[in-house]
Amino acid sequence: MRRSLLRLQIPLKEPFVTSGGVVAARDLAVIRLEDDDGTVGWGEAAPLEPYDGVSLDEVIASLREGPPPRGSAPQARAAWELAELDLQMRRRGKPLGEPWADAIPVNCTLPAGPPDEVAAAAAAGLREGFSCFKVKVGLPDDGLRVAAVREAIGPWPALRVDANGAWDPDEAVEAITALEAHDLQLVEQPCATLEGLARVSERVGVPVAADESIAGAKDVKAAAKLGACAAVNVKLAGSGGFGPARDALRAARDAGLQAWLSSTLDGPWSIAAALQLASSERVSLACGLATLDLFDAEIARTLPAPRAGLLSVPHGPGLGVEVSETALAEVLVEELG
Image 1 (cartoon, rainbow, N blue to C red):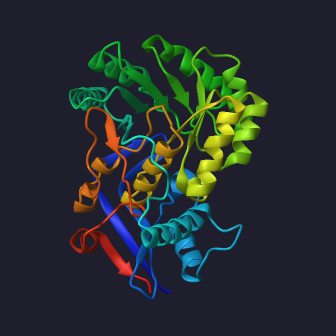
Image 2 (image 1 turned 90 degrees about the vertical axis):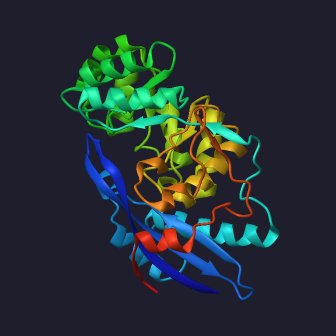
Image 3 (image 1 turned 120 degrees about the horizontal axis):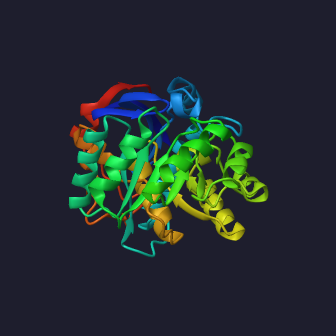
């Protein structure tokens, strides 16, 4: 088995602003495995240190040594697992999952920014056919921004807000109470911990969802036991791969919680895997996977763009992703061996 490790940097069309800071480009590590017959499998590590506390250097160090050991960063484990699964399923000529639907609903993600600019982006998303919108909050002008988006999209589309853990429980209750007039579908991760979410959930009328505090099935079960949330947002990278994310989705279903899948500005390999998983597990809530279009690079066009608020599910073999050499070279920083 031959392997190579690539460091990529993909520029964004516009800086992506959240309560946690600003991202101008996305740094990824990609592992490539090739067997003696020339079959190749790809896996992607997508840590985002301001968001999850995991550095890309840490992930790269784990992947240099081969399969990351238990206890290493989940993003590194996810990359290796995806590469192995991609390789195995390409040999068999089958997709990773067992797709149930050809396309899944996705939300339009709106970063924080001036209310008029965010509203214009929302209006553009509405024209493109999105029926679910997610607005980043946790900043002083939240009320103006969310009001502007609701006015731009009208009364029908679902509207979510995501604070990325910016508030303490009392601040969250005050902020959510002020925003709930805009008919919110849910508020995502208003506080940093499950205990904090539980304190908020019992005091607000808007359903609370957990995101950053969910890193696998164990956390889903803990959230359900605490009554912390009504829904969970599962990410392949943060869960440690396709299998662990699937376990988290099933744990949510068993606990009576709604669930969906999202990316953290992931590349096409993780997006493809998440689409297959969402289809296999019959996820019905709009998923946060329509983020490739935020990139300003050819690699963003590896998968088809959303149509009418739906993303096509790759049907394999493997991940069903074929990144051209040109697209890869455009964003390659260095080949690490």
